[in-house]
Length: 321
Ligand code: ADP
Ligand code: MG
Image 1 (cartoon, rainbow, N blue to C red):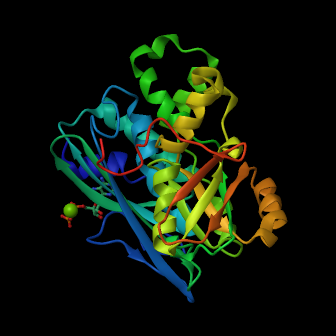
Image 2: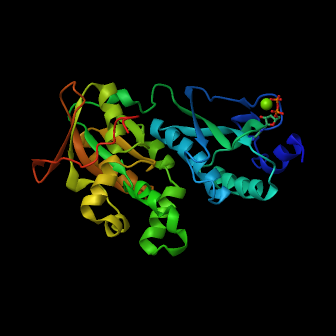
Image 3: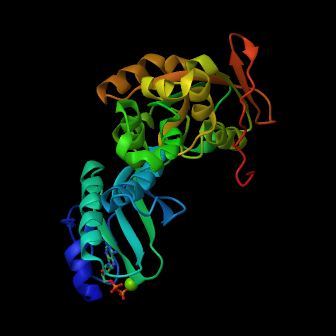
């Protein structure tokens, strides 16, 4: 199969003509319109075989996750999706693999309502690079630097599930119900995109939790020049995670695991009801886990029953291990 046929067969599934996508796959560039009074936001993430995903899992899941992790960045800005491009290096043309990959990518594209508008296809070790484009109302992007003193700190969903699931890869044919749930959380992140768009009117700062809560909240603190207090007992833990690793283990994964693709955001305490109502409207779980405090040390104070809490693992510095 030639490169052009391959693109037509597997990567041309988006009906890409709309108010914002003027030209999609097929020309030298995609042509996008940015609506009046909106700004373009963009982000790219690359997934490498054996580093970011297990080679032997269903290509549909690999594709789904490649897009979901990028959509998570759009959610973290409170953005509306515009389109995405896919740069893919394939070791060989394996039509069965491509069929499944294309299926999973289309599924994610429809779930998050973001069309595939272009890309690049080359031969090489399996590498998947997705670039997403979205728009925000001018000046309304949810930035890391916008947290304010005394803001509440919130997270969506449950934390730690995906990180705990990594170890299940060696026993996939013998998972119990809780383990199956955890494995799905690793394979199929569901960033709360629609909820996040409405959040831009209500919240101050936001980040998606991809490297673990401590690390990612740390980025907000650093950019906003403040510190935080977190109540460990308020961390949202799924029943399945607690069943799998116990309460103590669950807290460790929630603080320092990765791959959650949930949102951590800050907002004034007067916004509590608005946030709870919005979460209900969008069927998103939200939990208030702490507050922003003064201090430029960007320190996260963990408290359990009013006393300092020391996590066992402190994996929250990049490249520390
Ligand atoms: P060029 O040589 O001008 O870069 P290509 O032959 O690489 O063009 O691509 C032809 C068209 O197919 C372009 O519109 C490009 O965006 C699109 N395309 C190529 N690879 C992919 C892919 N993996 N997914 C989506 N679109 C793709
Ligand atoms: Mg090209």
